[in-house]
Image (cartoon, rainbow, N blue to C red; front, side):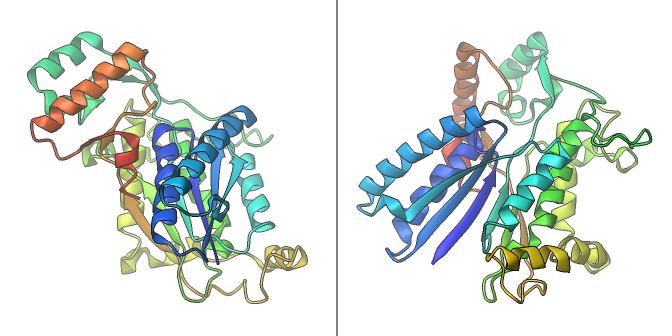
Length: 326
């Protein structure tokens, strides 16, 4: 029996670590009769090739460690740009016509919109309030404001679409909605949609009147707060009409194409099990979301270690430990 999992954008440090942990836990805990198909997404062919090589090496090492067959894990790279809705739709169509089901989708990809640091303020806060400074760094990070994605259509009246909002929320929302036929394909075990949030998703950063966070320099934090709201209210009676619409399976025409390509089943149009929606955050771990020169990156990791030694429960330090969350 196959397990199909799709961590979105694995080239990021956390995304790659999620893939590695999924491989390790599968090989360590599942019987020899089970196999894993791990789909990962990147934005380019070059990144896909690099990531595939690194993950295959990890599969080999993990299989040797747990004394099992490495062929139980199949790696499949895919390309998607979450800020390009045509790219999102193309990925969903490829998966719908090539997979029988998806067991889980982990929505980790996105952008922060960071452009730099207020260095003097950063140094001051790290020296005077280390734990808070390295847990909630928005006080000294520089971020873009009002950045829009490229036009998605040729229509002159196309509404504006925020880059951070689209990459962190709407692109994921559109992708998972399109993949509902795969996530609801099994009769017994529901599919899982796991959104990755952040400790910085505080209520003060989100303004409902500025839904896409176009008028703030805290677009990343606002997008993560919106993610929290969407997931944590998804089981409330008041949100059920919208959640049911989001979790609805494909149209009959799409189902017909699935059957024609031999990957669908006759009952795919009827959701057999409603997918479960979860949210998780990895704590504070060292990734490439803030581009830093190598000496500064290691200084950041050192500050994380010091915060943890001082009692912080949030600093997981490495992406692999952060990957425990999803």
